[in-house]
Length: 328
Ligand code: COA
Image (cartoon, rainbow, N blue to C red; front, top):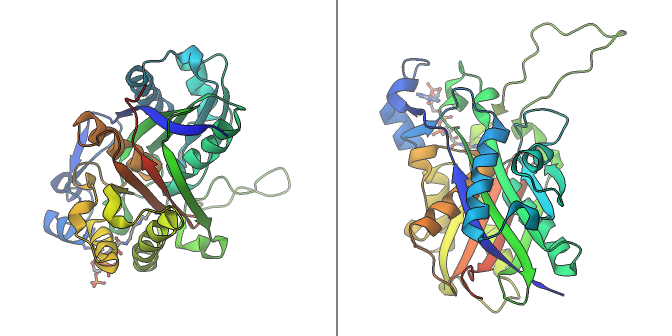
């Protein structure tokens, strides 16, 4: 079996910033409420770019940082709940756009846990040698599915993309993966697609495909599952939290992260956060944060890093990595 490691990262966000003050012009809200309840100060909102546009830019950066060419990639997985289209997959769109002619391409739907699921799937292929070099992207234009009249949700989300290149070989990287799902709690976070309507069934009046959420229940689930996922991903690895240099959580809410940190008995400072600048970008949030850390030289070869996510489905998961991007 091969080892699997991340050899490059990239990210991209739309240039348009929407501050909390901007939002207060749209719905009945204000900066103090949003900042104190969530930690979010601003988010990026697309003025026209779609999910595949953000994904392509993040992908090209990740490919450059990995020092490979698109022809080297033989697997592309895009994790998104806001694809441009039902068909083709966003992954196929990226393949066409970047010229990764050899790649097998598909999308994964696991909401905010998407990037963790993507790493999990790619790692299996790379370990067995069925594929050698995988491009994993988390990309969302959530502003397409946010209800801009609902102050409970529209203040939380933003648009963005992050990407990583994974490669199979002899150098260690992905040490442990833990993932889970619970479809009995699907109503807590939902975003409907098109309803059944055809020649027998007339179009439903008042149908909306906007996102809905039970904020309080999601909050409780998130705090608990971050703690559980971190404990599970460390289990039987020989490592403890003391050995971990960085935790990169899904960027949903500073209070969720503070709650999880308290439960784990560690400082919230050990969790990297950029949600103040981007809000919750769902599948993009973890790879976006990871790329930011890599570009700011916050992660050194040999560091143990945990990625931990949770989201609609419900879904959750964590990955323990020994960072060895630069090892030859
Ligand atoms: N601005 C001003 N007031 C707002 C508001 C906003 N944007 N959104 C809600 N409120 C109001 C509510 O109407 C309520 O008013 P009321 O007491 O008069 O009824 C009050 O603020 C408190 O609402 P509540 O929902 O109890 O707030 P909260 O402290 O639980 O925070 C969330 C709400 C959404 C921030 C919080 O539940 C949360 O973060 N949940 C997790 C969401 C999440 O991360 N989802 C994605 C997971 S992947």
